[in-house]
Image (tube, rainbow, N blue to C red; front, side, top):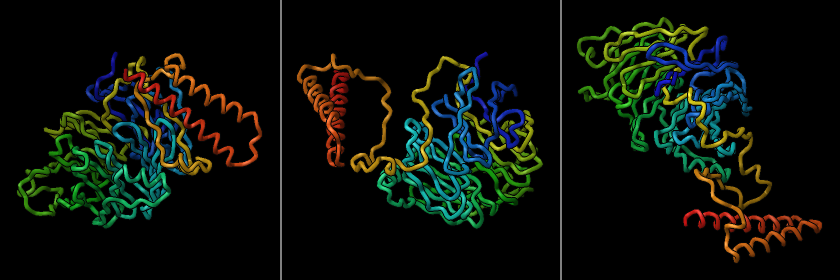
Length: 430
């Protein structure tokens, strides 16, 4: 039986039955499970619809599965420290992890560590990309929410220069628990949640605070529907609050009470069902179904319009992740567009062995393969390549006593490779 287009991923802290489980949320049937360890909160990503990755609880390890293969072969990537949160960009080119107070950015197709951000003062608790991957939002236990321009981060990271965030939002009084970014790229809205019992709505372009929502209990998780018409906040009292973001109110601060008064009843609705803090939330693409995970070891499926609990999925431990994703897990014939490489522990510039010209270069995935055989290149270019290769072979037979000679050889090899690549590209265009 083929898996549905939209599926639900869940994980719990125990790892007794599985690490991750794929569910058909319409029927409550488990489609597939992935065993081995357990997943930390906000650390599950699906890369290219093929690679399923998650960070281990309390260990410096990232688990990797080929989600569409029948046989489960778990791979492990060792990280510089315990990963507290994990996120991937929308185009699957970057994978970002929060390790202690630092943010590590890797390129997925090469495994290169492109940048390390150390602007937070305490542990990073949550990460989020914009839908176009141009900005990264991070929150930490230092009560700060920071916005990073990814292009600037990558450019300065390769030069080993410190990078400053685009915005630093310091309106929260207690640690940040969750961040969620809407659609619109650099013009989108961002909502942040904190233990200070508030959710704050920000404008990403200007960095201004649009509205402050005050709840009766600390907020543990937050999300928005696809249309960004409603905000959903999971609190430590087990309740999930639904807030209308387009309510006719000119106030910059709105108090959302548990026993909604007549004034707030139309703007805030409550989902009752969990007995412990709600740790994670996710909304389906059509905005009709809400999934929630809690420390009471249950994941609940809700019908948003009626606020009725459709079904409850029991787990063996506190639920750490719930997420609606688009994938065809059962299609074993699908092949990935790239191979996920082990993540390196040192910056790319530090591994270039003194090659100054290599610093700042980032590998790019080419979606098609170009011919690179000498028979496909014209005679003049072929003779130039053969001459360059002969010169390199002759120089290899001599002893290299100085570093200057080694650098000359590397430069010749680079020129030959560039000539071969340009010729192949020109041939592919014709």
